[in-house]
Amino acid sequence: MNRSQLIIQEVSRCPAVDGATMADILAFSEPLRLTLKHMVRNGPLPVDQFAEHLEVDLDAARIIAQRLLENGYLEKVYADQIDETNETVQAYSPIYRVALAPLRGRPIPDDL
Amino acid sequence: MSKIVSIHSFRGGTGKSNTTANLAALLAARGLRVGVVDTDIMSPGIHVLFGVDESEMVHSLNDYLWGECNVEDAAIDVTPRLTGSIPGKIYLIPSSMKTGDIARVLREGYDVGLLNDGYQRLIQKLSLDALLIDTHPGLNEETLLSIAISDVLAIVMRPDSQDYQGTAVTVEVARKLDVPLLLLIVNKTPQVFDSQMVKQRVEKTFGCEVAAVLPHSDEMMTLASEGIFVLRYPDHPMTGMLKQVAQRALP
Image (cartoon, rainbow over all chains, first blue to last red; front, side, top):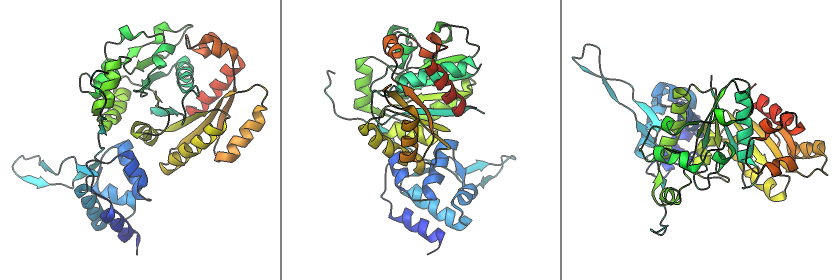
């Protein structure tokens, strides 16, 4: 299996989550782990830069991003923008960011 | 370009908050604008070192995480409280000391993504050269996040077997998250220990740089968190060692 196939296989097997925890990110293997970490640290990436970080082609990057999106690890910041003429809606490459899961509360006594 | 420095320890009581406060003071003494965030939400305390009383906290990190204020609204300029002339600035973002607020964090949790956004906003709004994050001991979501976004991770440990094992875990996580600079600070070293031997042993054990082996200090213990050591004892050998750590973290 080549690099793209390995990553696609990994993201296809990862469980669906309601937002990624840092522990989830830590559990991914390279290069996915450091790409997601880069996105947490430096902000969202368009798919072409996502592909560069993963060192895979654009088609593979789109599949990987889509699987991560479907499984709750990524979210789209925006998918479309209105172009400068404001007359047509033009689809741009989506920008992805890591969807960090909120820290969940625990049941503790109300009077504390 | 501003740098994020996380000061972490696997176990409590290593002197993490003291180290953070002293590094902040040394960096501000160099003229830098420094932010200090107390992310030890469950057991906050670094505000004491900067002489901040709970009653002075109009807002805290907790308020920001609950969407009740901007993160910079919780910042307190603690520079005027410090002894000596400091050309830079230190802004403290404290966590709340109120029992109800700590319980609310436990009960409701918070948006970890907001904490991440808050770090970047603080750097921008306060024009910070360095953001120091005083973390909760051990590994949890916010400490993992702090480690992941750091340019420098300083792990404080004591020369103690429990600390050795815990530090190994943190070092492994830091390596997995590819932290650009990983520094170990061995603190509270008994004075009967040979510091050079301790340094060699720790470096060999973890395969990473030991920035300082700080001796147990009666002066530090006597200060009892009622001030910043490096400002109170500017000529003390330990101040010199902490200066080396600050220089290594932010050359």
